[in-house]
Structures are given as structure tokens and as C-alpha cells.
Image 1: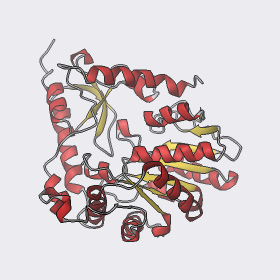
Image 2: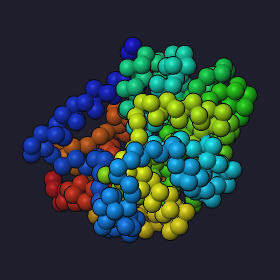
Image 3: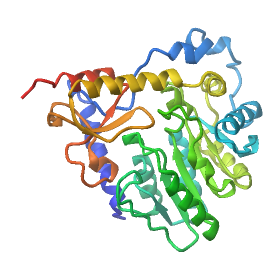
Image 4: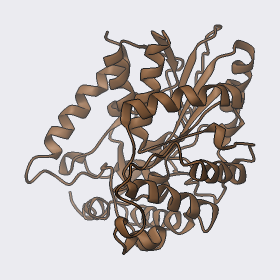
Length: 359
């Protein structure tokens, strides 16, 4: 199988190989990054061993924790104005595991072909290839680009999309989601939204517009780990139609087993933060980093970000000075010299700013 989506996998393998070498160049596109709010967001988890906060002699099942599922549903009722209940929530230990469960479910359900709106995360490409699922793009451009060319099939199918378009910090426009919603209703198609970077809007809004898609035909990943940018804990959940929840939860449990007690405690804490103070301080911190980088003169051009902690920009010097993910890593044409920048990676941002004055 040689779908265009699979071509970027070898690029990711090459950069991962170089990234792990001693003395590698600064990786400005990395996945981590620190911030000063970790202790505040973690609460007791920041200073207390999990064994003092939970029973570590017992398995720590997430799905059987109806209090957690109910709290997660409350988050989305408040944020999105949609009437979710615990019967719509499949909790898990990270987005990657949920992606694995979804593609396994596709294969077991007999889906050998899916449609997708570029870009999708490279792990989805990997899973599609390994499970023999053919991905068919429904556009050449990405949803935030001028001249976006959405071509939805006139058939009942599964459509995969990512919102926001994480590498550029751009949200899928409302009119695109409205078009997809109308198409879902007309064809009965299922839509899977990878919303791993949702709920980090720079405008202070809470609602994610993908919540407007038909609830009974939509699956959506949400990742509090990314929401708080605390990646050492693993926490994500899938919002699912009630008629699919039990099947997906059973499959997820049998594929991945129970979570650790620390991850279960974190899942509760993250939901508590989401219904309480939220992550506004973190988002403001990201915006401050973006402003400093923009003001430094280190960038020649950029896509104006509106969500998350990544920026897609063209540094004023060629990126041979550092490791970076450029357009080919995201199944994107054009944008010569543009790379993904992690605004929470202090060393990466400083490396870019240090190029000012170089010839």
C-alpha cells in the first residue's frame, strides 16, 4: 500500500533517529516543553506520592470509574453546551492508545477504506498502514488555507479529521464543520475527530466547534495531558455515541489494560482543573512566548496561530542550524522554509532568537 499519506512516515523515522543522537542540533519542533504552572495544575500530585493518595494494591480501572466519566461529561456540557453523560465517555491513558483502539475497531468492523481531511497525526498513518486500511484524502489543501478544496464522497463512509490543525495552531473553520455535519446527516457517515490539542483557544473561548457535529455519528478525542502540557502523565478520553461506547470501551480495555493509579488520579485532577480555573494562565504564557519570538525579528513569515502551543513559521535563517519539522512532515505542499515551532520549548525559541544578526 503506497498512499501519499504514508510517505511522511519515513521522514519521521529519519528525524527521530537524528534527534536521539548525542550532540544533536536543537529540535525546535519538539513535543515537550515546560511552563511555570505545573505545581498549581497538579495540586497534591505535585508533592505527594501516589501511594498516599490512592490504593496502589488494587488495579486502577478507568472505565469502571463512573465518577471520573461523569466529571468528564460535566466538563463538556459546560464547555460545549452538548448534553454528554458518562455513557458517552471512554477514558484512556493517552491519545495514542485511543487512536490504536479506533483503528483496531475499524479493522474488526470490516472497514478497509476510510476518507480523511489532511493532515492527520503520523501515528494514524502508521496504524492505517499496519492494519491494511486505505486512507483516501478529501482535499489537497488544509482547512485553514486559502482555496481549500473539500470534496466529500457521495457515500456512507468514515471520515477522519484533526481539529485544530495542530502543527500550525489553526482551527478548522466553522463553515467547514457545518458542511461536514450536513454531509453526515445526508449520508449517515461516521466522523472521527482527533481533538488532542483542543481547548487551548487563544481568544479565551471554551467551546470547540467540532462539538456541533451530530452527536450520534461522531467520535472525538480530547487530551487533558495536552490541555495542561503535563506530558509525564497519560490521560485522554474519547467522546462517543452512546450506542458505540460499550463496544469501544471493552476493546480499549482488552487492548491496553488498566491505567496506573497515578494516571487515574491525574485524570480526576485534570477534569477538576477544567471545570474550575482552566488553563488560561498556560495559554497566556504560550502567547507571551509567541510575542517575544515575533518581536525578536527571528521570523520572516508565519501562519497566525489561534490555538495550542505550536507555530508554523519561516525563520529568517535556513533551518540547517537546528532540527525541525517542515511541510513534508504534515502532507503539506508549498510553504518553503516554514517549520513547526514549539512555543513551550524555551531552548528552541532561544535558539531561533539567537539567529538574529547572523548572516
